[in-house]
Image 1 (spheres, helix red, strand yellow):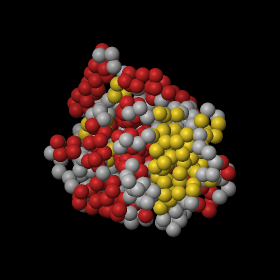
Image 2 (cartoon, helix red, strand yellow; image 1 turned 90 degrees about the vertical axis):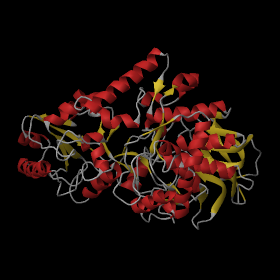
Image 3 (cartoon, helix red, strand yellow; image 1 turned 180 degrees about the vertical axis):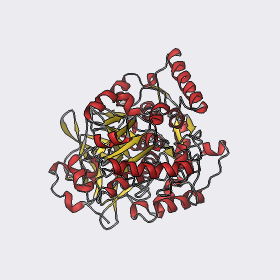
Image 4 (cartoon, rainbow, N blue to C red; image 1 turned 180 degrees about the horizontal axis):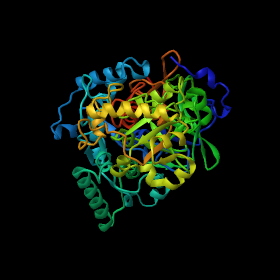
Amino acid sequence: MTDSNEEMNDTATATRPTSAAQEWDREVDLLVAGTGAAGLSAAITAADAGLDVLVVESTERWGGTTMLSGGGLWMPANPLMKRHRILDSRAEALEYMQEAIGDAGPASSTARREAFVDAVTEVYGLLERWGVRWSIAKYYPDYYPDRPGGKVGRSIEPQPFDAKKLGDWVAQSRFAEGLPVPLRNDDVWLLSRAWSSSSGFLRGAQFAFRTLGGLVSGKRLFGMGTSLAMNLMAIVRRQGTEVLLSSPVTSVVQENGAVVGAVVTVAGRPTRIRARRGVVLAAGGFAQNREWRERYHGLPGYSSAAAGDQGSGIEVGRAAGGALAMMDDAWWGSAVPMPDGSNQFMLQERSMPFGIVVDQSGSRYLDESESYIDFGHEMIERNKTVPAIHSWLVLDHRHRQRYLFASLLIGGKRMRAAGTVVTAATLDELARAIAIEPAALRATVNRFNGFALKGVDEDFGRGRTVYDNYYGDPAVKPNPNLGTIEKGPFTAVKIVPGDLGTKGGLLTDEHARVLDETGAVIPGLYAAGNTTASVMGHTYPGPGSTIAPAVIFGHLAARHAASPAPTS
């Protein structure tokens, strides 16, 4: 049931569970570790049920990776779909999850998938009742929309949030690491071609008016993951729940095998906190823990996750007897190395026409428009036989003229100086500059150009699905994802297998209870979010498949803890 416990036995003794024999420094009903979507969702549900809740955050800033994310939630058959007359059902959602995920082990059991789908309406309504105003990405497809049960329009997100409602708490968040504008997921696909299509230009104008409207009205509007995190924290604050920053959980306290509390470092001092209804570990994954990344992934990691994503919650749960699963996987994608050492996650740039991705031999090896987790998996797999970390995104001049490329706007000059971005007048010159045999790159481009003219990618099927087309250019015919590479100057951008976080961790059941090696529940111990092995298995069914399970299983953990017999 676990793939990793034996490798972690050398972990520091600070994470070992302790006895309940000593006196307590404080008592609450539910102790929640983490201030991302999973932790805040758990806190909201618990407080709504009347529990006394304490939230602790290991770093000095709240919001976690959620605040740096797109903030979308993949919520099948949600009420907003019904309002927009988008047909969906429980049966279709479960059918699609089976088709997209397959057999991924106990982390993605039938019971957990059903619990996820069945809680969508309940979670949507709870958060709406507490003030969240939802919007729908009506045209955003599932990532495998051609498979049975696939749909368009299952992703939702909060409307932009006015940060002034949080007062001084904004300064203690990770807002400065996110986008300081009221951007929505539903904007990105159109803004990427804002100066090359009428629909893109119109959305650009709407975005500009939204931004200016907020400023004129005295609001400080944030969108995407920042909006989600702020919405959730605003509810937590209104509920009167205390949140302690720089207060990591170092171990749980067990009595006869049940978790009855935890040791938390508060103001530099170990503090024993009794948790009458249990402890929820929602402290993120291990995306920024280089030692673990090398051990489980064979890579140093090129993540967009928050700096505090060190695996502390996973280790605390493991030390209490929790089983681990899927530690070898992550929410992969493609990323561009930035001059400051960070990695800019890349999405629509590789999907738009007039560009291809090649390995270090100059060959294509994937559908450049496919879902980002598939892209990451294929890059890593390719690298086992042909050097592909790093790869190169090779662009025709028309790509640079027509489409937004976020990382180049941020650090273009420094990226050129670092060799991350290379431009040349001819393809042969470009090939030599990026250490690829010119004849090999020419042969790849010539073959691809033939596909572009016919509109059919005979090698990898690029542009075949509505998901591929979503990040395409409808003005390019006959395939919106294929455009010839023939007009210079040409540009090559170095790309690596980035990620939005890791997806392996503690094994949990349909109530978010942590399980041990035998599959038995560890009473009083819950986990959600990237601290757990994902219900989505080794894939990514649709936009928001990271955050939606975090919110839902955080909610389910608290709901179970608030039930009459929470430790059973």
